[in-house]
Image (cartoon, rainbow, N blue to C red; front, side, top):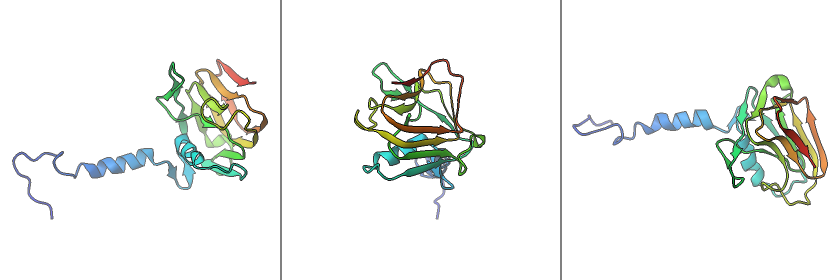
Length: 172
């Protein structure tokens, strides 16, 4: 039973303010909803726990998702946004269950949107990026590179678009 308010009580001294804050946080930042991912960070976190990349891993992203990828500071650390999309062997990413661009998943704004290098912690320089498939994504407004890929392998972008490309898709 709730006690009556007394002189000097404030919203901060009771814990009632916590309930709407937690609910709001879950609604805004919940990484998985209805069986699909709502953030790139949730996929990156799950991928960081995987050591055996010989098995295919499929990540379905929620339709109508807009992923603002972070920028790089002068020391090449990511800030102000989500993680870059890391390419790893046997990684499949799709927008919606069908993996079609009409589902409207967009990755934008970051200096590097798709990372296929070892510079940002994606395996060793010798890792081969075989069987990587990205379906139904639109990549837009990259600060430097839409995709930076320096590893050998088989990478397929199916029904994807690269828009407002003022810089490069860098393959070496």
